[in-house]
Amino acid sequence: MDIVIHTNAPEPVYEQIVRQIHEAVKSGTLKSDASLPTVRQLAGDLEINRNTVARAYRILEEQGVIVTAGRKGTFIRQDAAREVAKAKTTHAERVMRRVIRTLVGEGLSRKEITDVFTSALSEARKG
Image (cartoon, rainbow, N blue to C red; front, top):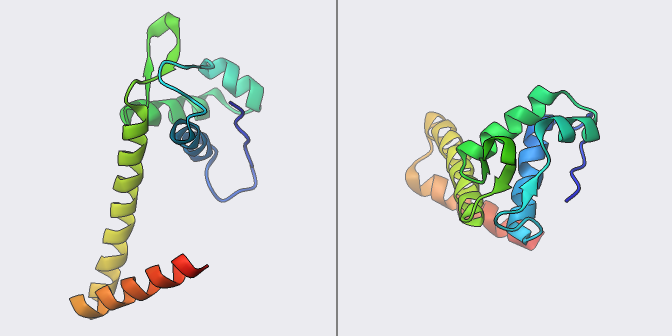
């Protein structure tokens, strides 16, 4: 699996690593029990700070996507695909709650928010 980092992107580097590992798990490129490079190795390959890779791995481990087995290495967990799906849903829920709070704060009713959401979803599916 190749990870590509764009240092000028608005997305932080550690999030790029997390996202790309999520995508590889979801697509099946990274299967259960596949080993990942060590923090030191990946940081060297990507020419980035080790703490950045360590942060990404920590997030992935908290999400249940990877498991670190000490000196044996870091591996994709058995149920990683399910955990990736759950992490994406959790993120989407956080974003939606934030948007809904903003709309409620602007005085929109539940029906108005539902109508706006339905319209925006319809537009997104077209494009």
